[in-house]
Image (cartoon, rainbow, N blue to C red; front, side, top):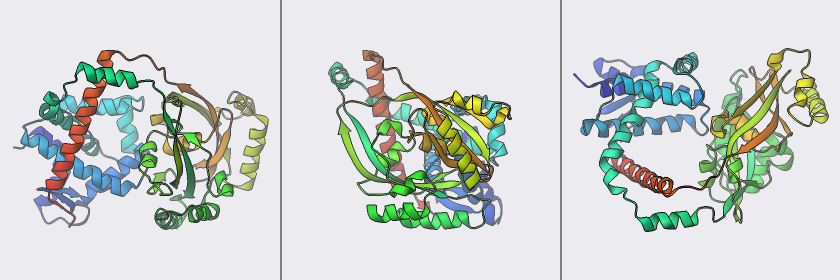
Length: 405
């Protein structure tokens, strides 16, 4: 009988071997001797979308499932297993990132069409991979006093990055016939360009944000002001290259890197961002946009919105404070462009029938305290473990037989 780890992590992928099943439960990817079924792939895509993950979701889902299979296989070869209690702990850790109790997190996810087996299959590879990395590489992470001295000397020495971007936000509402397909075609075409002029022309023609008036051009901004999940995508680009299509609620986002430069001072990291959403019926209609413009013109802060909403349904106004990594992707992108008291009308909800007047309330900078020598040493060890883990996973992938039937 296979152990709990393999039963939990690969139960769905074993289903095609039980009979001549076709379609949803047929293999779409084989990783060595294990299969990834169409059902698993569809479930991972649904899960990533529920998380608000940006990027090419189907491609990212395939890459994650391949990596997960390799991690589970490596763990099995080392005799590493996980217990039901550890799985529950992994789910609780995942839930805590959204400040949710495990039961509430599971209820939200299953309401999005994701089953519990998919959550376990998402959590287990990470749990066993930690043990794999710890057992294989813990003896290779010794840190010398000289290395700690050098690292501490660099801390706080200044330097930072700011970027100059262009943006295109394409409407892609599932409720509008053909809109998702059209947006996908446009995005796949634009992402191949390295011409600022072509990108700007596409922004003027297709983009749904106010920046379309300037060809999608955004002002210089510190890299720390971008949503955390967007930063590595931007930093991986060459000048004038465009990101892969980034799926956001009811839309697809594209960004072009027009410039990047180092600054003398480091921009602050933010511990939390506070914002308000005021809901206006009518979506992107002229009447709704006019109402949003009127409100923006008579308010200077999020506190003023309480007066606007006086005597109306309290649910129309929502004020939130979250760590940057927990803010939904479409809201995070818009907030990155706003200063305190500024507003955006680029987002809709309720299938495009409700306009969101989004206002930036303020950013709370993370407290920068002087790191101790032990903190620096631990950071160096973690960096080395992460580098060793990435290298080992790359080796496993290079040696694997990965087939798409």
